Image (cartoon, rainbow, N blue to C red; front, side, top):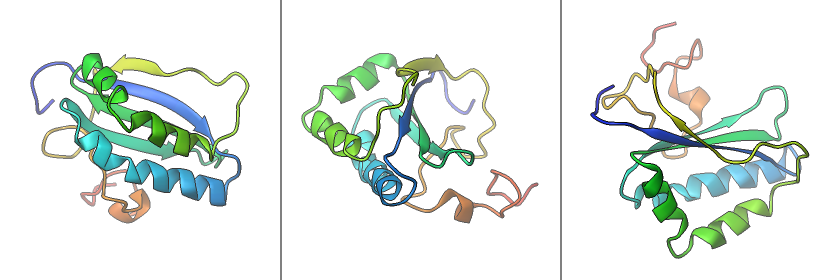
Length: 139
């Protein structure tokens, strides 16, 4: 796993008001939120996924050493304001699941410490060779 101990993932779903401007602003807001996350002890990385079948649907996965690290982050000054700013680009989605906590039990991340890292705003498609999710040239 490249590290010792347990890693947890906080998984949440969001639907933007539209697939254009609202989705772009939501994604930009998530990117800007990265510095806040990186300032939290126990934060390991994050991934924002956008559905191909419904481009208003995003899955946000944040990785932490412990649930307590995540809970400490959401109680830091400024967190609620950032969430409110992101929510301005969202629409309600009936039947949307709530936030979920999961333990990372298997991963194949091709990075030094075995966990995902952001690409500092780089589009995920641009970060690899276009054949797979890997950035090491393997199919």
